[in-house]
Amino acid sequence: MTQFPHRHSDGADVLAALTKAASERILVLDGAMGTMIQRYKFSESDFRGERFAHWTHDLKGNNDLLILTKPDVIEAIHLEYFEAGSDMVETNTFSSTSIAQADYGMEELAYELNYEGARLAKNAARTAEAKDGRRRFVAGAFGPTNRTASISPDVNNPGFRAITFDQLREAYAEEARGLIDGGADIMLVETIFDTLNAKAALVAIEEVFQERHVRLPVMISGTITDLSGRTLSGQTTEAFWFSLRHASPYSIGLNCALGAKEMRAHIQTLSRVADTLVCAYPNAGLPNEFGLYDESPEAMAEMVGEFATSGMVNIVGGCCGSTPDHIAAIAKAVKGVAPRKVPVLDAKLRLSGLEAFEFAA
Image (cartoon, rainbow, N blue to C red; front, side):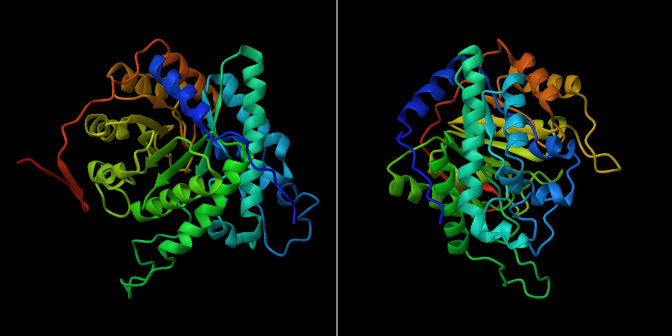
């Protein structure tokens, strides 16, 4: 088996540098990786490369595999986002758990995908920093997997679960090891539709921090799946935060599913209740009848910029449909705008089920 070196930093320098930057300005995340990959119109043979030429499963659509078969393209996309104004980019590892890779029979590649994904993004970060002297950061991306721990996929058996908490925890721990060893600066648990899945990821990350003697900032980003204002597992924005605030994340936020217009009220809620940084990276509008996102960079930047001028955010970026052009416009829109001030909240008993509950004596 290929041996991968472990990182040497314990992460303290990352937190110090990130905290300093976030105190000075609104930080900018990257945009969509999938949108950029689609522009290349890769064929099945492109996804396979030489290494997987005879793989028994179809591989087209496994965007994470391009880390291994088209590494130059993935690194170039990361660099495009850095040059557009991103302070941090996400690794191309949204589906790099053994659980998600099982669709392609590639469970054994999980660690390698995460290690190489972090390494490529780190290369791009160094290249960008060398050009202008501004430190860039790599956020190791943990997707939600294609299984849910809270909801039965069988309408006739509501008690059935396709995955257990421990199976998720073990898969996320493998992902965390790869990302940390590959040089990621931040752990980003994103596009959360099931809070229990996120809890498994956070437990796994904490265990790996202790195992690797490292501690990195952890960002959490949920997904309000539709105009109901709830996650897929049924929680309101406030309840979602109350469920995860014990993890003391570096930031809490929302991404995907909604455009900036539809996301605004939920970001406003987080800004009010969260005593940590708030991050927003919406889609480039809602999909059109063809499933494509056609909100212009200017229109998206105007709305995300309003999040900033209203004092609601500390970190902004884009999700589905966004490109380096969108990120450049967003970076311009928030430049010089003061970051949201983190509120100091009274100590209260705060509980959550599907709704939030705050006890006031």
